[in-house]
Image 1 (cartoon, rainbow, N blue to C red):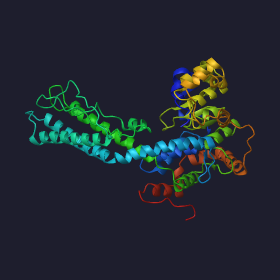
Image 2 (image 1 turned 90 degrees about the vertical axis):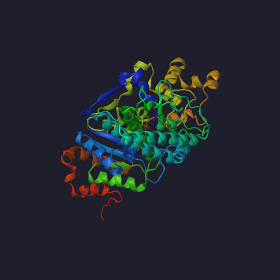
Image 3 (image 1 turned 180 degrees about the horizontal axis):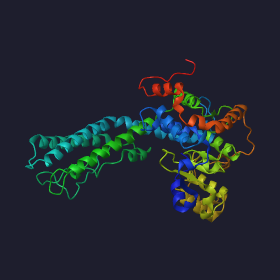
Image 4 (image 1 turned 135 degrees about the vertical axis):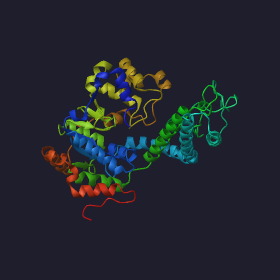
Length: 462
């Protein structure tokens, strides 16, 4: 989410803007874009229970000495900017198409998992046979090898039929199957499922189901490679996890899950605010609060916040032992030779949550255009350039600029003022709940119920 390719671009061209820092060295007062991390907990494979994933994230913050204040988008009402709604509609169409691809390839990927089990079993049998004193290979091991190869080839036929078209399948060189004959032509290595889904587009609906390279399972002398079996099994496991994560990410957050997250914050005495009276998104309100000195840092994975926030932004938050990334845009702009408004215009050309931008333009080209033309209006006035890089149909420069600018006349609603007052109290008393949050029996019961596959966490007062 956010500005396309921003962090890799800054790492290459303005490294001074990026600072890896330990989470326990981050200033205590942090305002957090709650929706981002709520969605990440929903999609994470850390545990199969999203509430426990979010609880682990909260414990990471609390154990590192932070006093977080969470901001959430409204559960019912739509407080998004109209331009972002249009961009989300476009993304929803792409997501629906990817979901269709997932459903069409479901049977093939179930077969992938079955092949993985066969690979692991065969690898173990081969390893045991190799360790035998006489070096002889048991007939059952030989049969398992050939059965596995037949199964892979049957899977490849299924994968090819799902593609909806006949693709050339070149024979890999430098490998042979037992008997010296080159293996039947198969695709080169295991194609990434994630990359396949990312390349889906309206013009090409054919399903790119990954195929397995049988030839690479053999050594140069024609014997089956135990190490290759294990590597291929590991690859299939990674592909299956990526596929499952994609599938979970395609499901929307339910109101019940969002309400349970807020109850968890209440039980841990962590203050939060849900936007319901203002037309603003969570990351924008986080930036407003930080700019008004209510917090020292903004924590989000949405890079749009960098253009809104005047304080450094904390991102790439995983777990306590891994350093997070602190992004200070003001430190990196001198290396780019741009002012903050010029960099914002470059991000508009490259694309963000409010516009797709200009066709064929990334941040590298966009910043080059800004250094050459000095303003976005001058870029748009170049007719030849516009023919090569036509802008998005919804490319409303004034509206996107306003959406990416922090408001100067913001009036805090009363519930937000009350939540911030509670935040000030929590900042003073935070050590009380940091010592052992699970000393609260209600929280212990909530966590226990959240870990039950079919259980529903209790509501307060029940």
